[in-house]
Image 1 (cartoon, helix red, strand yellow):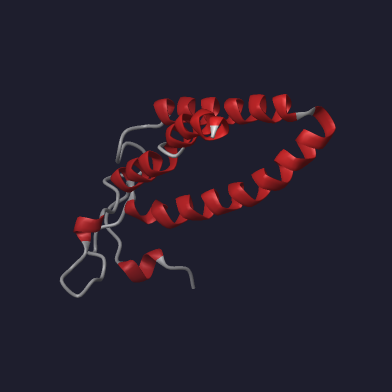
Image 2: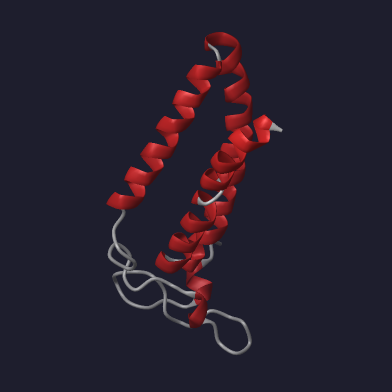
Length: 122
């Protein structure tokens, strides 16, 4: 029972970062949301394997310090990130969808507007 009381605050605190980050990504550019999910999945797989390797090689203290460092870098990167639309024009948001569910002709490019077909490769 004591372990739960120690891990609960830590788990709740760390569980806030991904939903908050995803909300921020969605606010900045809706098209980046799938990339955020992909990056989260990749980081989860790599992080779980890497944490085992680090723990076996250097101990759990090293794993905790490395994890804290990763979170600090993520918070610093979020603080330094430009505001919504500052780097890629106006961005595409969920409210840009037309009634049939397609994206409007506006695209996140500083050179003007492009339609959805121009955004897709091939």
